[in-house]
Length: 325
Image 1 (tube, rainbow, N blue to C red):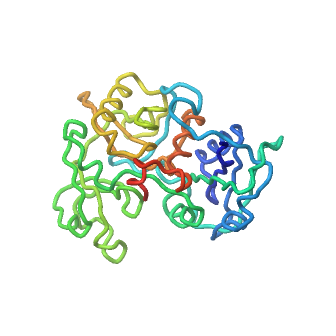
Image 2: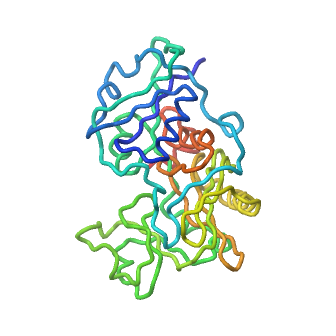
C-alpha cells in the first residue's frame, strides 16, 4: 500500500532555516507551500486539496531509512540559558496566514490513487502553527511542559521548577525564566520576579520554567528521531553564535540523556545540551522540531525530524499521541 503524497507548509516570512528545509524538501520530491497572508491557503483545506496532481508518493521518514549524512554534522542556535534566540525555536517572524505560493518538483510524479488523503507537514513558529495545524489535520509534537523540571539533577546540574508565572512573580533572586514550548515569556535571566511580563501581558496561570542561572562554554543541538540522535551540531560558544560539528563528548552525553529520559519525549524532538567551564555536561532544554532552526545542519536529516514532528494526525503512533500540542 502506497503512502499519500506529502506537502510541507512554510510560514509567510522565511528564515534561512525555512529556506534550507524548503530546498531539501524539493530535492526529496515534496511539494512546498509558502503562506502569504492570514488564513489557510486556498486549496489546502478544501475538498480539492487531496486531488492535486503530479505529487510523488514518498516514504515516511525513520531513523534507519530517511535522510542522508553524518549525525555529527548539524548546527542551529537559540533557546540557550541567558542567551535570546537568533532564530532558534521560531521559524517565522510573521502572523497567521491566507493564500500562498507553492513549488512542485519538476517531472511530475505518482498521482494519488482515488480515495487517498494528502499528507501535510509544517515547519513554522508556534503562533503560526497553532492557527494552521488544526485546519490541516496536523499533529504538532512537543515535550511536556515540565519535562526539563522532571529530569534528574545529574542531567541538568541546576535546580529547575515548573510553576505558574503568578508564583514566579514572587522570586527575589536572579533566575533564568522561559515558556516551555513557545515565546509568550522570553527566555532570559531576570533580576527577580518583578521583571517578568505582568498579568496585563500574560495569563497568570501560564506555566514557566524557572531555573538557576548556568553559564555554558559551548552549546549543541541534537535532532532526535526514534530515540536516537539523528543529527547534531554546535550552535554557540560563550553565549555567542558559533556553528560547527558536534564533538564526541556531546554525542555521548546526548545518548545518556536519551537512555535515561527518551521514553518521556515524542519520537521527533530537538534537545539542546551544553558544557560549562568546569567540564560539566547538562541539558539546556527541549524544543519542538517543527519550530526549531536548521542553520548549517544536514538539511536532509533535519527534515526527517520536522516531517515526523508535524504530520498528519492519522499517522500518529500510540506513543506520540501523548505528546500532541
